[in-house]
Image (cartoon, rainbow, N blue to C red; front, side, top):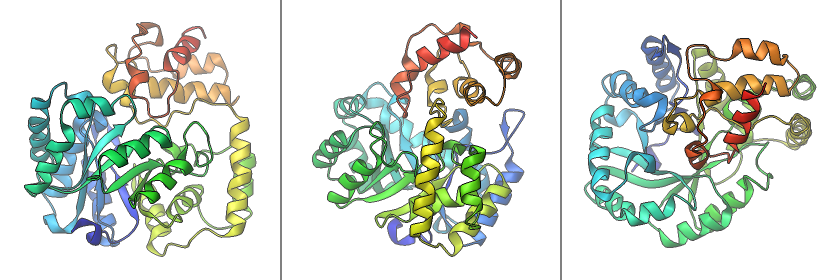
Length: 365
């Protein structure tokens, strides 16, 4: 089974692939896949909406078409914003198989379950449908990704024992954050005997692009890249069997491979360093966007929300002026002033950002 097929703890998250003119750089992706598999890694993660649907397409073209199916583990997801009724789930699933050019998924996750989306899945009979797909051999393991409070996770796992693994946001910035509840959710998963998959270990690059004073703390340790500290922190929890990294180019790939090839658990000095770095980061009050782009998938005006937030964060951290920010906002895409305040974006935001409020601040710049 696929748990046993997992060779190492590093998973290739295919959400942030290198782009050329709005298309995935397939040459680079193929090189990265080859390097990843050659180094002994085999877990790939995608979802129907990643990169406007292009992630699944290139998985099919660059991975499935070039490697034997037994050479890799593929995880995909059932996102509730792509169906409204029960009858739409199987066609969506079959389309995912066809696009990825596979006959089964090793892991199939209920995507971004929350207290708000869970009732829809129950109403549409999602859990029974997915269990049947597993019985048919089209899914090897049923899992879920989760962004909500620990009590909600406890309820779902109690009601849905078919779930074998839980994908959680775990990193050294969020682990003790009461709004994210990473530690509490991890503890719930362990209580229910579930293995844990880590997402956002570097928080969408947030824990790589550190304030200078935070960089100095890690530099004194001489232990690797800033990303490596974040990845090793997440991988050091005993029930974590997979850490996903959204690698965008060969440099990231090689750094991550070096980190995980001979994985060294975190030590006391490094935990102290991450405590210090956490406090420095929290003093710079930026928007906690990880660039997942779920918001843009549902925005009726196609506003590039993560791109706007990335620029605005530079203003908040005093790296650029407001005037400079205006020049950096995308000129060929919708403006923040186009926002109709429908709040659909807030309904799917894993970080629970008050997007309408932030977009209004940007509009007033």
